[in-house]
Length: 340
Image 1 (cartoon, helix red, strand yellow):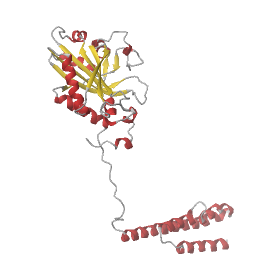
Image 2 (tube, rainbow, N blue to C red):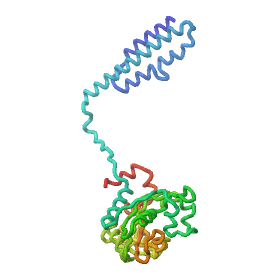
Image 3 (cartoon, one colour):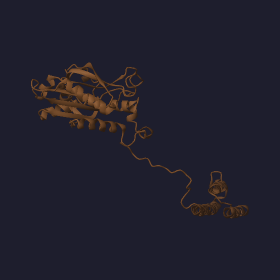
Image 4 (tube, one colour):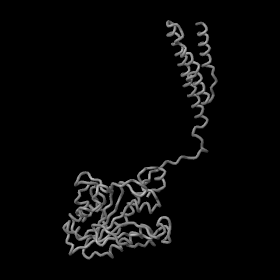
């Protein structure tokens, strides 16, 4: 017991005499006495070897030494911090500054705003509708026959047999034509949903902008001119378009629209796959069956409709080859797009 008392007295003297002049030495001081393999830890581990009646007394002395270590540690830490603050009151001016990250506008939002701005300047109003639709608005009123493949569960996300997540924004056109007589000139931007396998080229949700113009005497030539103006504002004044015959249930005749490659000027590159043309949207003259479904006289009125994918335009505009990048919220990707 006398030997143990002498050891603890020596430890108390060591605690006050241990040299400390820097942060690293301060941490060494704490580890030396209180670390897992520290001096005091070794004494605590051997307490069970003492007689039962002596353990409490020596345990109190060891706890007192532990408190002395912690008290000196906090005192020395405050002294070191005060000394450092006096030596460099405003920090190291030679260090480079840190620029805070300023939030920007998502590239899809930038592209959508540009598309909407182009068409509103041409006289189109913006219309919106629900994302949860009925079979009538999404398919039947748009001249989709019951056996059309788009009705299959592989493409459409159904809530029940009559309610679904809209697969395009064309239902907005039907709703507008139901409540408003011609002339009608609107675009319908919004999110749409399809039961697609997610890959670099497809996603389960994406954005569309559909357009509709209904009036007396509307022709295919009006549609072509509208799309040519859009292409020049979107892709540059030298952009040209071409139409290829296609099929959509709600338009007749129907066409796919290509724009001359804005990257190579039509000479051929990886974006246009050497063809000089890039597909951007589908369009056509509104089928008379659609007019009849919404109560518009197809003998008096004609109209055109078109639909384009915002992700498709953004991928072309920014030369992005993977649609998933738009939805991963990776700041390394998003920081590349300036505020617009």
